[in-house]
Length: 270
Image (tube, rainbow, N blue to C red; front, side):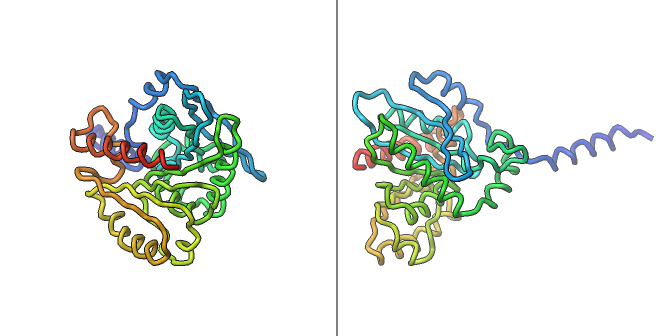
């Protein structure tokens, strides 16, 4: 009996059971390696926690506003680090905390967890209070850097977009929130705590998230809060990452460019 086909089928089945990888972004790390700006890893400590963070500094003559970047559901990826570098290129100090710090089996974070499925499984179990405390500590850390002017904004993508909206209801120090394809709080009492403008960035082909926009508009309007969502044609969920990839189609790339332009224009008001 020929057992080769059976072995091949078994091998294929085993592969199907492996965690799915992070979306391909091999192009991201070389971009960081070519950056002329100062990039480094720092540890932000609060209580008994230590949060691994990536920070990028602009080449400017004066103190700069800071932006805390909240990563996608895939964790602190190389792509997220390129976002901090691009914000630094625009003149801002940008810091991205790995909110999965300490969550891996050996005490590491995103790098140790590795695959998309492993990260997604862990990220969904993070205690909300811990996330808020990590972000509060990151805001406090970056705001007190000698190169910072004390003003801090927050922006996040996907899972991080939702966390950005939620964080706006839990921190009075930040000056603006930039939500990229993330849903907002659905309770009026949470919305009532928001004291800053919230700007939304959404792809037209992302009804899963876009279906939450009307409720956010209703709750924010009723509470007298500023919420300005914009939906970008030709884009789907994750378009800020996908639109940066070398093989992105022209429509997706254009949507990302328009969103970046809007973000930088709004950051000037912070």
